[in-house]
Amino acid sequence: MSETTDIPAPTGFVETHRWSILLVLLVALILLDGFEDRVHWADTAGLWGLSLLFLGVVGATGRNTVLRFVMGVPVVIWIALIVLNEVAGVRVDGSLAILAGILLFGSMLTSFWQLIGPVHSEYERLSSGVFGYLLMAMLWGVIYWRIEAVHPGSFNLPGDVGDERAPFVYFSMITMTTVGYGEMTPAASLPRVLTGLQAIVGTMFVAIFIGRIVGRLK
Image 1 (cartoon, rainbow, N blue to C red):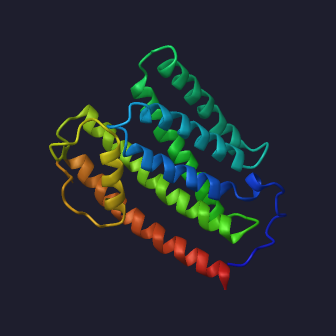
Image 2 (image 1 turned 135 degrees about the vertical axis):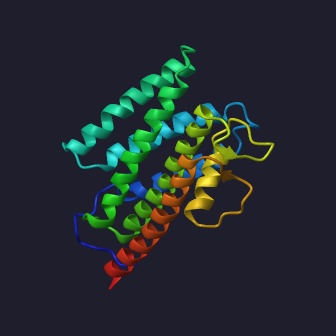
């Protein structure tokens, strides 16, 4: 891939490879989710890891912009809720789930902007696109997880699936990639509509993403 001169190249390793670092962190958090039912500290580590992820996305937005403020305020609230949850022992699981969805959506939009906005490197544009794609899967997974928590029986689940988030993120990924192994299926109208919508959006994103990257390289 060739370098672009859309904007001046930043100095420093972190600023130069910000989206690549965030992508690696996101993949690590998704993998950590798979150990939530086996390692007692995985959930806490995941919450603080998401905090680093959201802070990194805020840092990736333009300085003195409305977007940085819009993303920054919820991140501060998110960290405050984690402190209450993990340190003070105040259970705020529902609030954390809602705020996580908001921040995942905002982070996804921020990363998508890199596909059309100026960047200093096409490598970073590629990283931000993959980052946004995985965030989309995680966001839908959180939505499915909360639907099942509020309305049990909304999904047909294997017997070994409890209240963990990881199985729903997995279901989200195979839905978005249209793999559909079939061991988890929607059983109510709302999740059925959402899974169909996710399959369409995921397919469209891949087509747009590939077209955008190829177009930039011509």
